[in-house]
Picture (cartoon, rainbow, N blue to C red):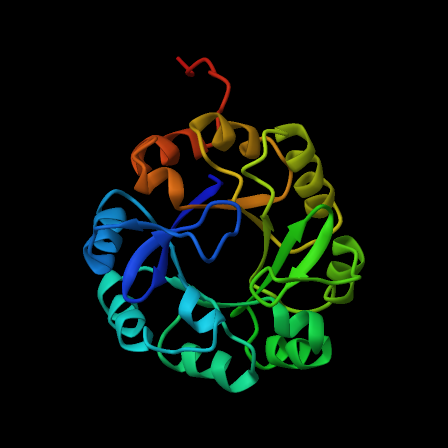
Amino acid sequence: TPMQIIPTLELQNGRCVTLQGGEFDAPVLWHVDPIDTAMAWVEAGATQLRVTDFDAIAGESEHDALIEALIRRVGVPVQVAGGIRSRDRAAYWIDKGAGQVVIGSLAAQAPQEVMALAKYYPDWVALSLDIRNGRLMTDGWRNESALDPATFLAVFSESPLSAVIVTDIDSDATEVDKQLGLITGLAASTRHPVIASGLVDTLDDVSRLRYVPNIAGAVVGRALMRKTFTLQEALEIAQPRYEAVAAFQ
């Protein structure tokens, strides 16, 4: 199966933004319409989208109507992320038609609650691991926890999660091998499909990830906004490569 390329919209104050190195205070603003952008990605072949609500991470919920409209319009599953820190909030988005809800901080603070949620909504809950300097970060990347990512992930080994999303917050650094080592190790340690986030800035990055076992997908945002490459180009590279086989005569 091809590795999924998941285009992402990141919302702040009703507008599309991207972050550099996890800096919430200095977002790059893009003058594009969120729904038009999402529709264009679907037309280009996206089979899943992700929307991250940065305001919800800060405790606001001004984007709910926009995200609901997006879910209704696009016709592909939408992964909703950002500020889902309670069972009620997760249920809210599942009821609104989200394809998956992405949960990070709540899992670090109340793992039993997230396990119960995953059991109640099997294959709807995606576990998010945000990692900086090899440590798990929580609360919108502000707090470094004492948790080791692999140990944390093992806690959820029996939960029916839809995916594990691994974000390398240091990924603006140039140490590609170190980042790939981190995600390769985590992908090898879990039976859940792993989605890489924050690791794709070039088409070469897509190629590298395609060869990592158990990487089911890659979240791509900044590179598409910057037009570093097109979604079609990324989807093409994400296809499995088969050796040429002689046709039967």
